[in-house]
Image (tube, rainbow, N blue to C red; front, side, top):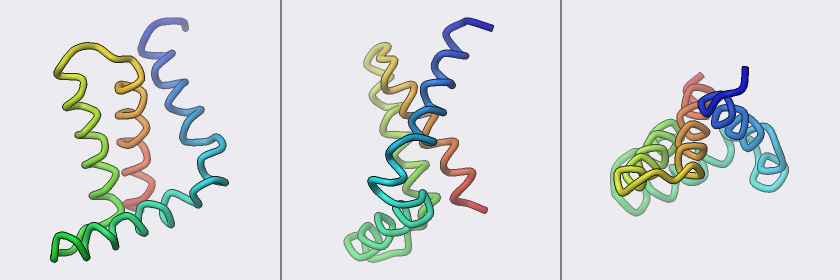
Length: 87
C-alpha cells in the first residue's frame, strides 16, 4: 500500500529502529536521562514517557503552523516510543 500515511509511518519506523539507538542508547535510557534533567530543572517528577509525549506535542505544535512532513514523522516517532517507554 503506497499512500502518505504509510510513507510517514515507514519513515518514523526507520527513525526509531535506525542509528539513533547506537548514538543515544535505548529509548528507556535516553528518555529517562532527559526526564531526570527535566525533573531537576522543574522541581517535580517527569518520566521518560512524559518526555516522549511532550516532544510529540512540540512537533504537533509546529504542525499547527502548516504542514511539515518531517514534523509529522517525528511526532509519530515520539508517540510510538512513548508506548515502548511506558512498558
